Image (cartoon, rainbow over all chains, first blue to last red; front, side, top):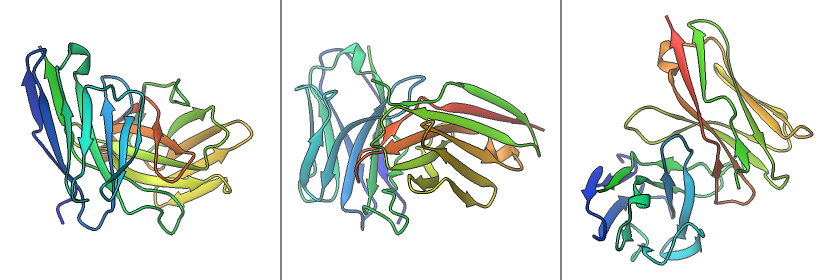
Length: 117
Length: 111
């Protein structure tokens, strides 16, 4: 297994366009997460899936954002009518849930960087 | 609302010496704390974790200390090596799925 894969790695778009990011998690992980990271900040939680069910969405996820995980495997994050404030690194992570230590350890992908002009 | 704070944006340390990274939190419901390390152009990678029922966890050169009464944790790296130069994020969880991250501390290890 090659870890969590994200595509594309970098997307430059004009304001008002739609963009879609794809995430392929580690195959045996049933949990999938999307985070957003802006310059000088840590990752911020956006949404969480357990298998195909989207169990929580952050208030940061406006109605222009939609995430899906149709068959409980890969996930897509779509941003409609992009704004300059959407420029950020979008990180995907996966996990199998609580480990023996009790911590839920997330494995992150390298991220998809969005630049909105 | 920033529930996890890393007040030192950067730290410079000489190779072989100790690196101490600090993290404060405000949510008393946090029950697990994790440290992640991030190299440029890569995603954060898990380093070490600690449960709120413990005050210390050690893994090789890395030790995390937790002071619940002060809502403070720290990561010690001994001895520091050039490959430790990275951004370190403190993260905390109050449930079994969502992590809240600090803003990160950039560590530079000087030869």
